[in-house]
Length: 298
Image (cartoon, rainbow, N blue to C red; front, side):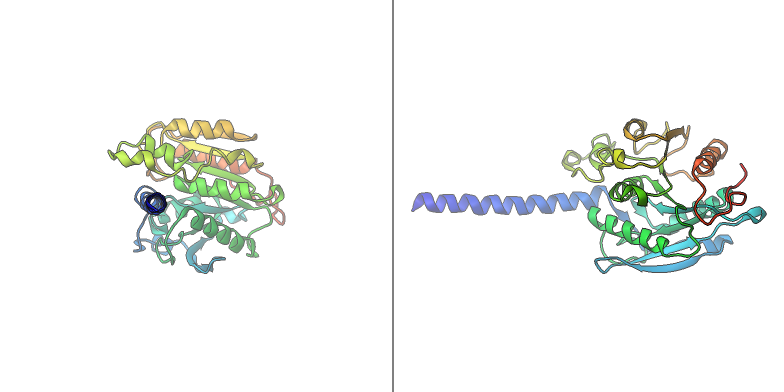
């Protein structure tokens, strides 16, 4: 009987340990990965740009908030592409308003940006699988718009959003993958980032292996542009180089020299804007777009 009690005690203890371990990992996921805020501090309208605000319902019942910001159409040119923006792990879409407007004006593209669950006005709480569901909902929304030409969607991910963009693209059949993918300040995985973090915390070595783009990027069969800085204080340049090496051709790499992790796109703008323009101009013109109207002038 003593042996039976002892064995039962061990089983209960192991179960309790596994449950507490799972809770610890969930806590680490929140502590090291997601930093949402709820207050929208700036909108495209406050910057003089027209935009539409939308609510999107996900397959698991969450409601996401998003903005569709049309191209400025300088020179009367019809935008060929719509950027689907997957933002980083902090703040909300309001913190990207300035860069969204800059993109529409400099590149003559539409931009759709949305908040993951738990960010801004979006309901729920963020998790890795949850934001993947959110990404699918955002893509479905864009695919249903009449003003987005077939084959005209380009994924733009920044920081953690690069992993969301990679995962979504890799999960799609080749014929449904986006026209191209732009990865700005990408990471190989959250565990890789945590292990080189300057933030002192012994638990950083227990951070779960989430958002592993390195294991997924080779499944993408579309052109990829990787942008990273040699001064990025959050994600080492080496991680972007590893992702670029693992990606299929055609692919290109732009070194955004001197920029910090959270700097606006206007910093050292000449080279970066040219890299973005060249990448978009290298993509096939989408269906239902006049080739003479579809591209912006550098």
